[in-house]
Length: 266
Image 1 (cartoon, rainbow, N blue to C red):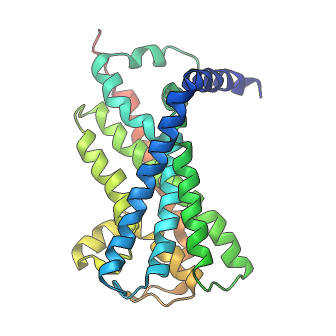
Image 2 (cartoon, rainbow, N blue to C red):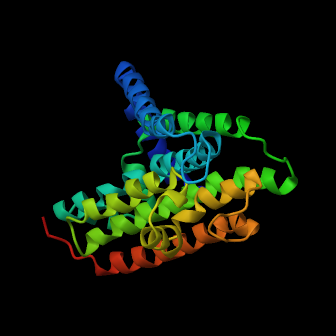
């Protein structure tokens, strides 16, 4: 526990810093909640034009959106600010992190802990609760466990994508837009049934990169629906394994990137 005290002190400092100006902090909480609500509202706009999209109703699609929203905002809240790594590399300020006797990744994550995004997580959970209530789900023990694990697995998966895309900065400092295509682009991709996407695009993102196991397959398992694309019903339970595989790859690339890092000397 003593090893965790420095991290607890850093988190406490960031919390006090973020909440010193309370009115500003409150406004940031509300605007972040509004941003997530706007992201989710796109699913209602889509289903306003058609009652069934890709073979799914609004309630069924909303379950996928809720799983994605809760998992993504949790990842964004905890490790999303790692995308600032490119700035640290360019300015040479990463050196100050490397000389401390603490983990590099935890220090960078805590450096700008985005507490203003707390309400995003609340909104994401609220969307998931509404989606679960609007569907007829058989509450077996397996489905209860899956409903708890799927958002956490989604958070690990998206967190891994954040770390993996940020690691590109060790080789390519201006890789931010490429990374955003997989983080925020991945969020948008998983917010809808993957049956709406073209064959080759779906094959790459859903199965090649694993995004199909964030919300689509867990939602099918919870709904008790057969997969129109032919995967078995238990595919939804693969989401934790896919998330762990993504975390392993992200950790491997991160360690190589840290070893590759050369200071700018500034």
